[in-house]
Image (cartoon, rainbow, N blue to C red; front, side, top):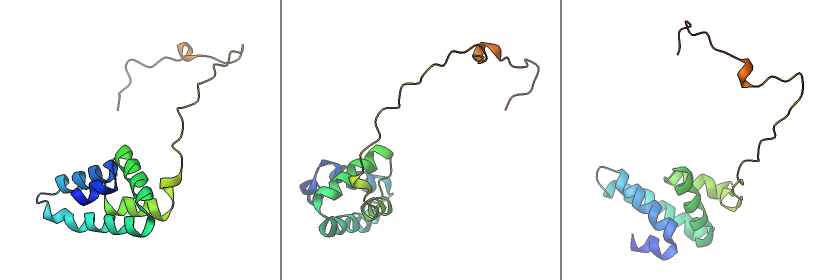
Length: 108
């Protein structure tokens, strides 16, 4: 795991997550080595960005990191916060108070 920490904190956390997710840590070594090889070919800065994205979305796997690097998702900005919703007031638009549920109707 020390070799992953040299690349960056996110990469080290991805490797730690992969190793912790396996019943026996040696089962995750192959995936971790593949991730580190991708870093050599794509660049450590891109690998670190892909690692941050993987941690944020909960996709810590070799396939996820590979796809992010292949499709340059590591270079895409995160979407900002959702736009504030605009409340439209108009005489013909009903709000939530205009709707009711049937208390006797089955749910689910």
